[in-house]
Length: 261
Image 1 (tube, one colour):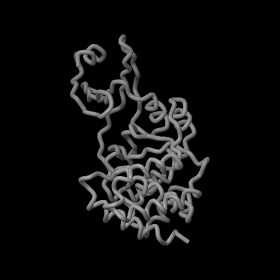
Image 2 (cartoon, rainbow, N blue to C red):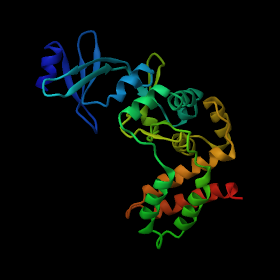
Image 3 (spheres, rainbow, N blue to C red):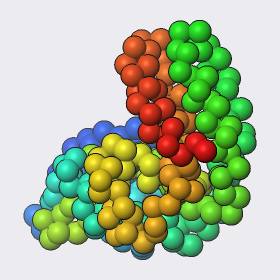
């Protein structure tokens, strides 16, 4: 951490903060606290400007080419599972999905939109090794094929793709943020919406949650939601979780059936 001490000075206390991509640290002085990271994505600047993550304070380029970013380190907490049903969560996710600035930045970074047709081929390959032991997979794949025409060609947005309640934080000043953007993709917003609704929101509340988001919960959106949820479930299959996933597949099929004419 000598390089950090060189940047900040001796009056700062520095401690590792973990992190999957890049090195992350907490730094505190007598009057300020920062979250520091080496080689963060350039996407961070847009997220900060849009108010999606805590404010980006500064960026510094090192002699070796590494880029160090410093964000405000806010006192706060993660959301609970029940708080994911709050209208503010729906409104912030809608803001993310409708941000042209965020979409343009990801495209400039070389991110390509997720293509459902190509994804379906990947899902078929993934499922091939499990179909003998999970007969329900055949029905789920058929639903993916049936719903494919419903998948939009032009409705693209920045999607977080890891909408876990632990990635939502609220500051002590009641500011809401969505952090940990390492999995972000350009895709149909239904991918994020479906994960959040099925994991955290009772079905009886889906329409109200979507009203706060700003879109109606129609059959077209439901089919897209279940398309991505089925895709997520297939991609999560492993040799050590088949018994549990079998139950998940059966539940998913029961939810999809009313949408099949």
